Length: 246
Image (cartoon, rainbow, N blue to C red; front, side, top):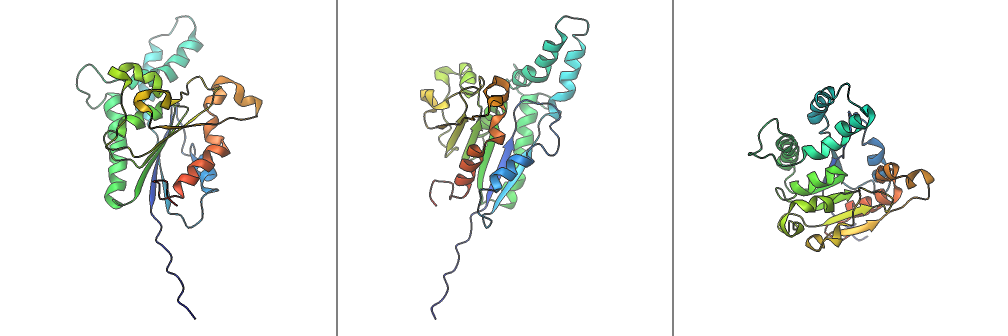
């Protein structure tokens, strides 16, 4: 009787989840999304998820700013601005060097500590980021600082942020190996990142739903985390060696 083949050791993948704008996400925010991805992953794959919740860095500040608007008109719109638009405005480099207490500094410090803790324990694992909305720009900026094997972006406004840069920015060639962007044409926040010549290395994938609910702009923007197509594509990549090889 011949010898049984020795099974190949699975490559560990560490996946960091970075959300978009939002208030008090809750400990179960990523649960259904991760469960959906896992449903498409072979049971013997070594995939580990690391959720990030940066919302506490902004909640108290945004409540304080809204309190300064008491008695002014359009309180509903002002509350929306404080809860959501302020998140986006917060992710702008301050005029002076960023320091503790500045959101730009604090969110990068939070990501760095989580990433480095995993990197210390599993230096050889593949490092992947899945991000949504504002989280895609935070993740893309972070990819300049750390080596990332795959960056997934969902409903990404990265092209809007390109207005900040000379030549509309550039791709972090030395540190980011692969970038995949999911977009929905009904989502006004989403962009086709590869249309920016400076970011043409990004692979854009259109996703859609026949559910009328997700034809509405705000609903379309939250669609990615419940999309089986998005979950399946992510699972497919996580089941590869991440460089595109089975």
